[in-house]
Amino acid sequence: MVHDSVRKSFYLRQLEALISRLSPHDIPQDLENAYGRELSGYTGEKQLPYHLHMVQNEKMLLYGIRLPWQKHYFQMDNLSFFLKKIFICEVKHLKGKLFINEADQLVQEHEDGKIEIYDHPLLQAKFQQEKLEALLTLHGFSFPPIHPIVVFTHPNANLNFQHPDMIPVQQLSLRIKLFLQEQTANNEYNFTESRHLINFISAHHQERKVKIHDKFKIDLRKIVRGVFCPSCQYVKAKRIYGTWQCPKCGIKDKMMHVHALKEWALIFGPVITNKQARWFLDGISIDLTKRLLRQLNCPFVGSYRDRKYDLTILLN
Image 1 (tube, rainbow, N blue to C red):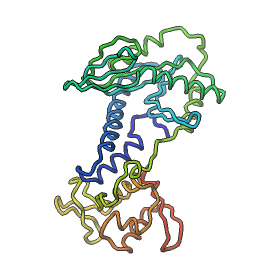
Image 2: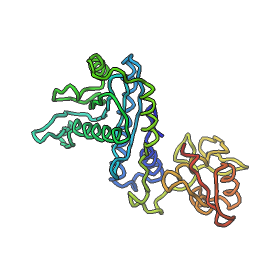
Image 3: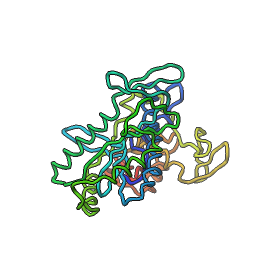
């Protein structure tokens, strides 16, 4: 489902789960880069609510929207619904010197002189606008004007350009207030219509989910197995007298294995067998594994030997 607060994307949770199950020297560079990009986006998006709520007008906010369009998907960091306008906020959490070159690309210059080049962020946001307008029109919705804004959220972003729609996050509320003061042709749009539109977007939103271990070609032999202490993190807990206990800090928890099974679901998908659970939890018996899986009250199919459990409930 689409959220009215900033939350980690499913893909970011997948990346985190996979990285937590690899030794640092076994993490491939492309996995580390993907994680860095997703985490940076999430960090930037977390700054939006404070500034959006500084706009006192009645509004509805959605975050992390991913919608289908012509056999592909387009993604928006934030949609802000007001009576007069809808704003698409495209977040860029970049630091260093930022400028637009002659080819209309965004250039990031780091302190060490390293240069990185990105697509023009406002063009990216306008493409999102065009796709959203086309999708809503196709399904018969009327809606107020949609306006894209690129928001730079990193405190060390040095913007070397001037554009009213590419701004530091501190200017976001003022920019929206100025827009809302403008006269528009349609003043009859109301939040009943807005609610229908939001329900449509929520129904069509689809999280990005990938076969994460296949995508990054992870050798199963490199997966770190076991149930880990939530306090000591990388210390493997032991099963002692009906509970899990950390040999380092001594904490006990009967349900410590649930987090491990959640990580399985994120890395390998929600379906798991007794044999797979024994392999991943590491070092427990077939009967104990059966009991732990049954205690989750999750759906299952198949007979005793071929039974497959659906761990989807752990991902909600």
